Image 1: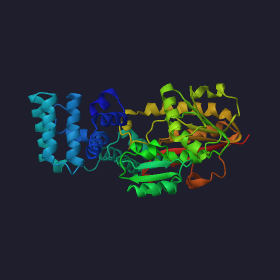
Image 2: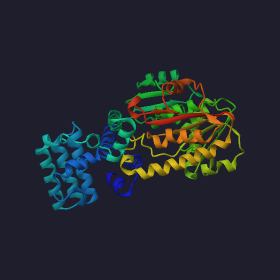
Image 3: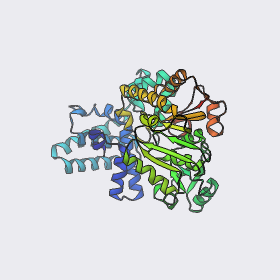
Image 4: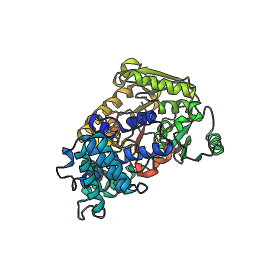
Length: 437
């Protein structure tokens, strides 16, 4: 899996899910495999920094599978305490023998035994510049750390990086067209699953040690969906009401679409647009599982929506915009190694075009929500400010109401920027915009 992620730029979460389904591992082993894959990717540049001391010709000269075997083994030696060091080394040597030849297994054995002898010396040198120290200590690209320090300060940048290396919480959203949150909590308790109500979302529940919630009857029967708490705030910010006509511009896989339909009591119409046909089917499957009939999934480019629908024809619009995704690094650790500063600039330009285009579809008095799962100002605050500065008929509504409204009243900018360290949820940006004339 690690080699596929490195060589083919495969998504770690998709690789892991499909591999675990094929392997049918016991729960404990599936948990360990998940920890090893995500942990190794999360700590990549720190592992490479220390391995360079022990690999004579440099780790970049090694075959990718050998390089990843060394990373995987060093991760266990440095960051895990339940795997005995000799077991981690022996397993690595056996894997090297099976996949390579005697020379490779001898090299792997030599490198890892040298690491064990020098384990107390695996510390960063003192006196590193702040950005470099944070990048190596918390394993993030230097350019990204420098950017976050510039935008939010050294303390906040380090807190972001630290939070990104923590395991993500498991949270579910209750389908309130079928069952109340209190009713769902009671069912979980009766089944012996430890859970607590979300402090962020009125429909959210945090689940502790419940295993894969997507394999439960509650999920299959449509009573719950798996969704991060920050993401649940988006539908609350849209605040759709029964009977409204709502446009979800970039809707797949349909979690926020379904949440809006649930808040509308499945009365009204939601046009859920998605660029790709296979992703449109995901939206339809989600609606069917949840028993929601108000969702109409369509395929098309979001930039073309203003040509497909009459102006002023929607009461609510959600633009959950394509973004760099840097708020969900704890779920997709490979993201931090694949994004570049140029990517962010290109995405921000597309976001501005999308916001400009779909805004014509909002009726006077209607609400448009702009959201992303990233945490940089260029894709968030600056995009919304640019829109407001160039569209005099639009502004910020005075009273947003609900949980999201409380968060917004505490925010300084045009929207709410949730950091990964704030609530233990994903990094998210949400801005609520009203059309006044």
